[in-house]
Image (cartoon, rainbow, N blue to C red; front, side):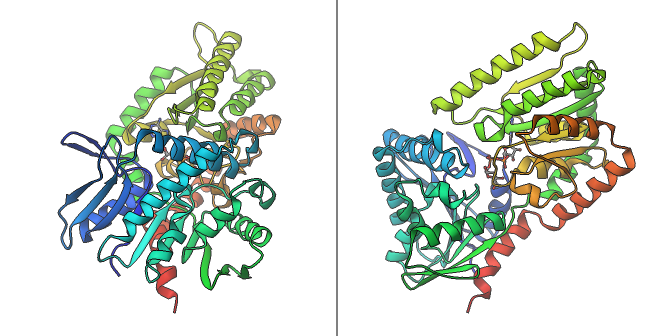
Length: 457
Ligand code: ADQ
């Protein structure tokens, strides 16, 4: 079977003039080598373009074509900053009070989905299209109408909310009908699959559910939980490099604390950064013996700065950290180190390797790749993972300290427990988690998705 046409909002490369740099990220790591080897198509929003552009790369078989679709500024604003990030993102993360149900956002989203669908349907020689994420929920049904023989796969990377939350959406029927144009619709966890099925039962009375499949208007969609993996070997080998160990050691010395707790997130309200800071404050209040001995290293990547909600959150985090430093800091000890910027994968791996504890406490998260990356980088098995029960990854990393991020006292007590955990116990937990992500890496994730349709009669 030829490589499916990949559809995503973000491009696999950053293109500045003639300079092409591969972006970091699990999906790029999985799909790009496959397309580079076998050829095929990747369709994405082409940032900074006035006209659509196809960039081709040589491969051993067919060419690999990257289709960069141009969108007008206003169009992109309505579709991306509007409907995707001010409606679907908060809704699916169960922050319905943050949703702006603005009709122009919906119109913009529909138009851009239509543009993508029309473009994809015209690509020659493809058998399968694999659409990534909530930016394109209407695309499957649109393509199916034009090209009924094409096989359509969809991976939904964020949570699917409980049906009573999803039901709030004024365009709920259209979103469900759009997605049910797929042959395969996959999520990270069975909980999200179940929520989707319950949403369909509630909103589309004509749909027939049979186990994990739904037939709607004579078309059958398979639903499946296929948790995402990372490029485990790549992270492991980066972490094993002498250079990484040296960088980690240097970082630890420059931070000056003998224990480091690490948190890495996109700066997003779903990631629970503020609550994490409050839990760390509670920890230092309740376990004062740790003052002067442990620091929290919070790395936040700038994200969606075009959305006011994100700018406000950044200001609140800045304020909270300032207050925190004023309350606890001493001339010889900094309780928090905070970086608001992007790092290279190598630098991040050094942080992962150095950290005694990873404190990942999203309020709701489809998966949380940082948890997987941290585990993969623990080549010495010395680290401990504290993970929110509301991250999809908690269904997989059962050996982590699984916490409720809203329960400040519990998070604080887990920090104390993680810092005191005997080395042998740490290794046992870490080994078990590493084995799982080694077996289920991003390539396995891709194979599992592709095999569902192959097995279908
Ligand atoms: P995201 O919400 O972006 O993804 P996540 O899974 O945490 O969240 O992945 C973030 C990625 O960004 C990680 O690969 C991490 O290494 C990287 N990153 C974070 N901070 C960085 C920094 N300062 N510099 C460089 N890189 C940084 C969505 C869903 C998730 C789901 C993924 C994949 O919201 O729930 O896990 O898709 O399906």
